[in-house]
Image 1 (tube, rainbow, N blue to C red):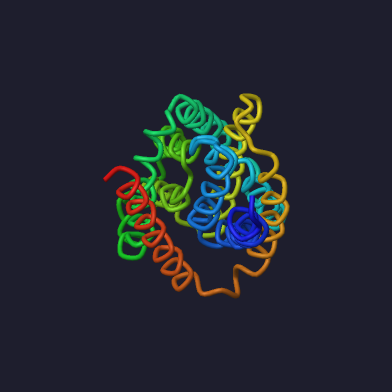
Image 2 (image 1 turned 60 degrees about the vertical axis):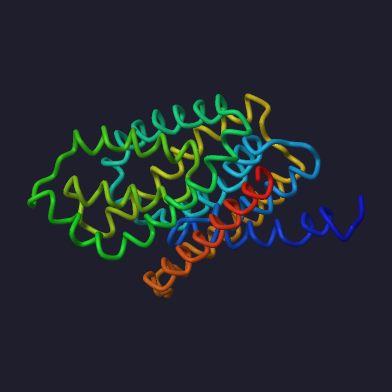
Length: 264
């Protein structure tokens, strides 16, 4: 295989994309917009399907979530008592999403992929006008039971695909009356670690991870995740979310075009 094609993709595009994916996941979410396209291209070059690529992407980006957890450790101590029930709900939903992915055929997942990416990109755009409005829906009350139920359903999506899941979690917080920004960040980090970590274990046990790509992605995404969390307060969140949304629309367009060319 020539160095000018898939090898170059593997050597340059994939690790660089994974590093910035780790940063994006820590700051605004949507890291899969960057990491999934080069990973699918790399795995396709060796005859591996899209479902395995998605499973590999989930496992590879999880260390970035874990290092973000470490970076937020002081904040997590303050809300430790509130983290356990949401962690359980996130784990159940994430496991269900992971099992659903494994039961999806490669052809169906490739057809769903651009729509999933488009949905995630739209979620990022809607986060601007809807963010404050969602906070008014709770009427000043807190609905912990509905928060747990809703977290299960949101985590199913996170375990299956993941991109855009951060906004869905934040929207759920707003609807259910969680408005303190520090508590929201603490809960979001923990639920992401669990809802991604549980399906990651499922994918590893099922043997659906391409370790030749996953290990280097995990290392660089972990570094990116820690740096992103560490410097998150110095970055304009609104500008970063718009950047992520634009990347998402471009990525969705890329896969819509790829599917059209492959099935004219």
